[in-house]
Length: 260
Figure (cartoon, helix red, strand yellow):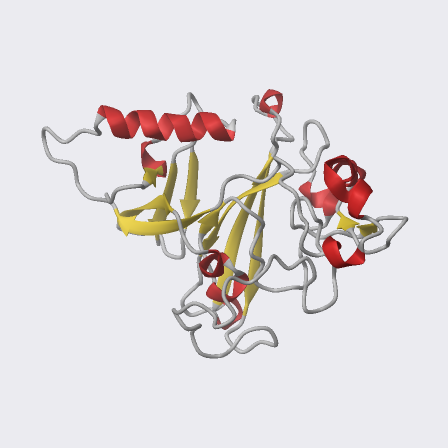
């Protein structure tokens, strides 16, 4: 385990445990670790596995709308938590495949019973598609530097300024700021759009921190190492894991990826 990593596999929470399954019922367990990464590595064109930030959608059709992303408890918009790049070998229609997990930010919504506060979606494309090159993306930074946050898909659909999901609603004054819900429009209005609404030059770049998105990290997946007698997580590692969980204000979860 490298320095600076948080092991999802080491984080436990009472009776809740999230287990993510890959393509084949399998023989080994893989663990996901979060690491800091350059912003360009977490964009859609790199097919990332990541935690936090805005979702890096793969395909642009069939994306979940605002109604599908509402918490089953309180009805508020769920926040993007993580996505895993999980292509299916032997399935041409799922050469590119991402699993997206969304969750409610309200702690009170995490209690037994349905409907719950979690939402999971699949987004996939064949290798030959209208969005990405047939060949793998280059593993080098783009020449123009870090790409800015894009709030519009190639198909023309707009994304919410707060959460990065589909934003079918538009500001009634400027008609350029888009949102998934009245909740997020209100948040953005209070945090600066009220002043920048009439300033077209600042609208695309001046996106404030709405305190809604989770911290963004890349998920690095490695095979689980078999423990030997005497192996244990250090106190420092344990404390760091729990600090991250506390700062996110979410139930601590154990995330394992089973290769199958």
